[in-house]
Length: 282
Image (tube, rainbow, N blue to C red; front, side):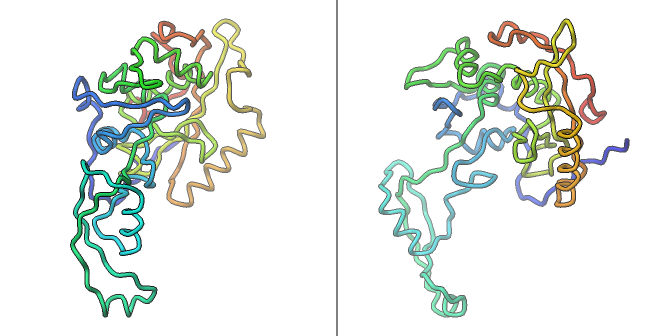
């Protein structure tokens, strides 16, 4: 099967490896039983490895625009002031008519002191990778610093599939793929070269768990059915999405032998996937 190179996107940003975060400045994140919220260092974490997703923007965290309409600026002032984060903005008048708008355009230079800020939402797998593998994130639970050795049990309590999901996440991250949730395409993960802002997704990853002894599928540890009908529907979905810019998604079934993933000590050496595309091996 011929594998096409990842399709690039037009962007002014440049990709940076997550290795620049290794043993660098430590950021703080707060666990909310679902994800880890980071308020400081948003652009650094997202630019160096495309970790997390902006809470108020679709892709690259860039919610606070330098050019805003007057009604938006007035609304921001009602939210509340943040004296530590002033920002210079250009305020333009409101108008429902573009002709009138450009005729009476009289922008004003103002200082935006509103407390509306962008935060970064990290998945449990991303937070554990940043905290324990890169040593650049402190995770707080109930306003108390959670030791790195306790994060595994904390996240596993929140999501019973955290162990197996992190095993897959860690594996592909170590292969220099940017790993993002694949739920919108019916899978577990999407693999990007450099990140969603630079290339379209190359592969859709499905995680399947097998018993280490009998090699039988452990249904209670899997999120979805893997019968012929489900797989055919998933392949059809991938083909359909491939027609709208997500070119040639390959469904990769990663079969991991089951282990007791209730503790981080059992994570040492997960079984390698039965099938790995050649581009994933590079």
